[in-house]
Image (tube, rainbow, N blue to C red; front, side, top):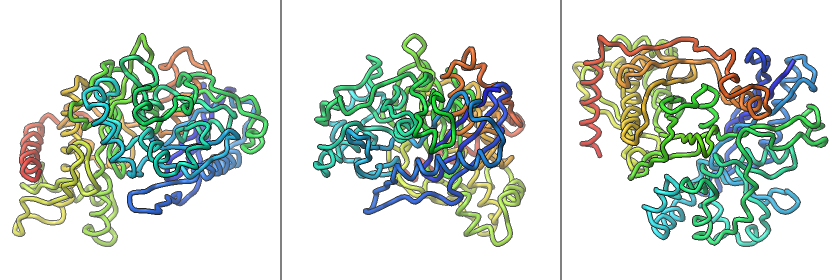
Length: 495
């Protein structure tokens, strides 16, 4: 029997899955810790975590897997890693961590990225990086250089969170093209490290880890790591990917025109394209997708909407009332017609939105009529507002040449609402396929690809079948389009 182990190392928890490579069935899954990991915020807009904490919970999640499933560790043929994107981990020559990781939601380097875009030139950045330097990993390293020179002087290598976990497993410091692109350190025109960004920051390229293919044997489990994990020494680590590209992989979103959507606290639309195009206003991000090659380029166009499930959660805890759970909220919202009788909600209450050119316009309610609108209208208008905001971002992606053919999503979070799923399918015109999968399962499948256990990527998705499909509602298409146009009018007025 060939087994695969996948890890998804997030900022909230670490999830692990043991998968049967032959059937694609998850034999066991575990999460550690049960509560959310602490995020250290010494100052406003800062967010840090200790990399050692991630490693500790990788070990604990593995122990839970071993306790819940009987298997021979020698049957685990490959290990894959998914991880929170954009973080910065620094180690010295002895591979010791020099400071806590500056993670994805830390915004201390915003002004550094803005200055770099001005110094390098926005046009050059967009043409060669497909993004502006922004508050990404390279800018965070520049912050360390400027503010912690003693730490900076000791740096041997900089890494992303997934690179750190792979280092703990293999004792090798390596990264991937996809990883470098998420740090805004990848030159898309030359398909290599963007030296001009590092030169602008005065950072030596020697600090960047060796680049290896995303799907490849990137190292083997050392005896020390194997003893800590309780797995077999020599097991290959053969895949690593940032959480959003990996989420797309977990849904078998690999071809141009395929789109992966998540609708949790925030919402993400990740579309695959073969064109190295960019948005002139940098309202979406473009990264190297996990299956990119020079001969067959694959890029991920990423749209993020901060205000998604967090709006629905706010309504549950502050408006819905005691005893009303999410399914009951969905049922109540469905009693109201499309368009919520003119009630409009803009779901932008979770910080600055990139699709609005980094404006923070806040969430707002419009057209509220005390004689017409009830609780059910608020609940429906919220779900419609989220769908319309996602579609607003999708229009940016369409203008860039992303073709919407297939939309795949996990059968979770907002997509558990029949109303939300139908509204999304109808306004986008796409059939939505919903799957029972997650990032750790994607990492396990990726490991199988990298280790050569499958003939090709498509063979890795055995057992991955949609649990349900949601077709556009043709009868309600006109009503949804009218409601969307009304929503857009309100958005433009509010902006």
